[in-house]
Length: 94
Image 1: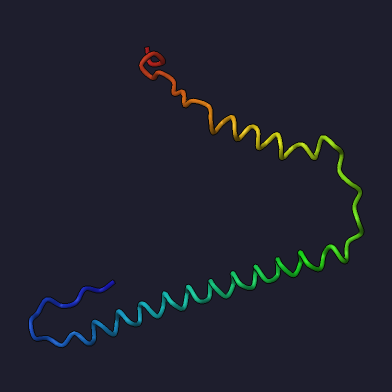
Image 2: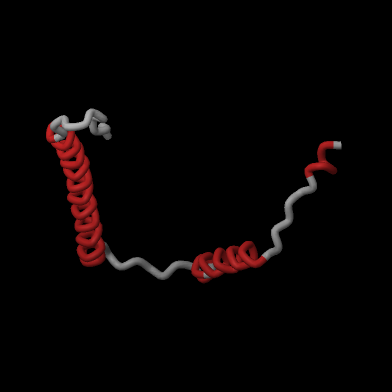
């Protein structure tokens, strides 16, 4: 970002125009990124809606495979509520 000149009484419209151009450039980049994000989310939504109609039905997974998210959740609860134990660095150094 350019700083305005420190001379008193000088016309600063050129400096303001440079700042406006810089802000328009960043707005253009963010608007392009917004368009890409909307396109990606639209394609993802379309695939979620269309693929189940096109693909054949799958058999149910084995029972143990259904418990994998439960085990992960249990492990995360254990890690979240376990007391923090840091090793004693002074004892390790000697």
